[in-house]
Image 1: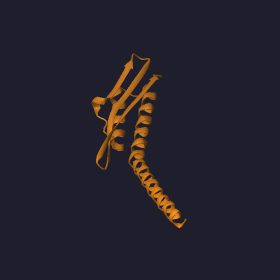
Image 2: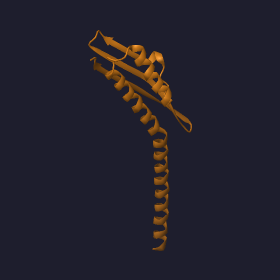
Image 3: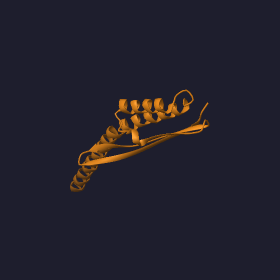
Image 4: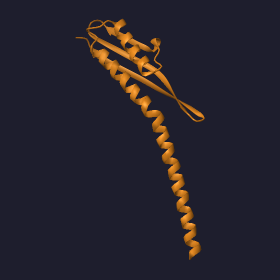
Length: 122
């Protein structure tokens, strides 16, 4: 009977170690990815805000504000990947596409972002 209990104790420790490894891996993944997601959300909000205020600014000012925000956040948005299109005096469409490399030990994940905002111009 004592032999049976020893086997159970060993199996429980192995399960605990495996669970701990999974927890550490999930925590490390969150540590690497959450800051990127927060920065991307801030840039998306800047794009939405600039589209809303399109009646007060020209395309050059909108582009400069968005590019400055991307640079401030450390996001690799290039000028060629930022589209600003007005349909006459009725509406504006702003699109930004970029890829953020997230480095893990032995692997680099290329996280693609696409932000779009379309608003009427007042």
